[in-house]
Length: 63
Image (tube, rainbow, N blue to C red; front, side):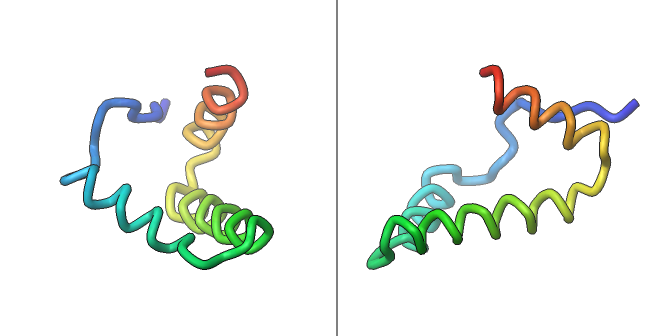
């Protein structure tokens, strides 16, 4: 069984967060929402494991 990794796992997370915010600079709410939706789908495709994706959905829906 695959398990969702919920431990910190991003090198230099502050740098990544700054980059994530920069991607949204100058975009409307609708454009930012579309960026977020594309990012989620790209990362879900990369993960690919239905068990891990289901665990992530559950965690996101019920934090």
